[in-house]
Amino acid sequence: MFAAAKPGAGIYESFYLRAVSRRQPVGVWIRYTVHKRPGESPTGSLWLTAFDAERGAPVMLKVTLPGPLAPPGGWIAIGDAVLGPGEASGSCAGARWTLRFEALEPPLRHLRPGWLYRAPLPRTKLTSPAPLARFDGVLELPGRDPIELDGWPGMVGHNWGAEHAERWIWIHGCNFEDRPDAWLEVAAGRLALAGRSTPWVANGALGLDGARHRLGGLLARRPRIRETPAGCELELTGREGSLTLQVEVPPGTAAGWHYADPDGGEHDVVNCSIAALGVRLRAAGGEQLELHSGHGGAYELGMRERDHGVALAPFGDG
Image (cartoon, rainbow, N blue to C red; front, side, top):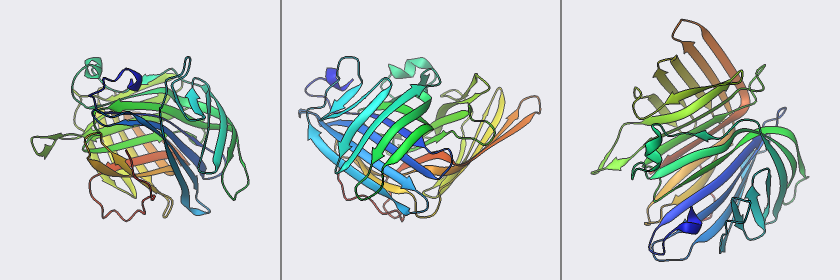
């Protein structure tokens, strides 16, 4: 996307991964991003967040470099860091990672109907090249013992656009108790139009027993959402029944970042990739299924307000 952007265009693009230990509340979230203001050359940034509930506050590192590339056979290269099918490597402010991953599910295209990918709105588009993946490799952090990823579950995602949503939520779930092959991904957003915020629209899917259950969409009933930086409750209702999600962020474990739009706007973003996640599925026929993951959830909230109480990393964006 970014490699084909016109000189006068303003865009951002992000490839990202998250992985979590099966046994301990330890996880990693790594982003490879491009930011381009109108009429300017693009810059690339590497963002690394390492979570460990026993240590409390996450490690947050970032570096920005000129000249991001779309390498042959890969998705993005920033400096010596590369992310592409099956591999992720790089270094950032003293941290270093060499990871391999296997996609366990086909790509997920969130937006429905599909013509939304060609429409002006929403201004953010997203897909997941691997909505469920298995990671192996090593993550080295300054001043800590190396972290071995040995079959950690997680995902790989991709989003891009001219600006971020006015407000958004992103949730990913894996490492469910007694259901290791189950996964969940939901993205919900509100847009700013004519000085007002639109209602929430949610898109996503639940993977269960080899089947993919689509969630939300532009034409679906509006979701019910109650969100704070400490977690959220979300309810989606559709033809197959209803799905209720509860996300809880362990106190003191959330990361805070600045996200910039190409036009100069900015959001505060709170992310935790070791959140507790509960899922309740009520089928239209009356059957009920519950899933729970003690630390396999990822939760991100993008917002305009500044009084959320989460310390922000000392890095700008763009």
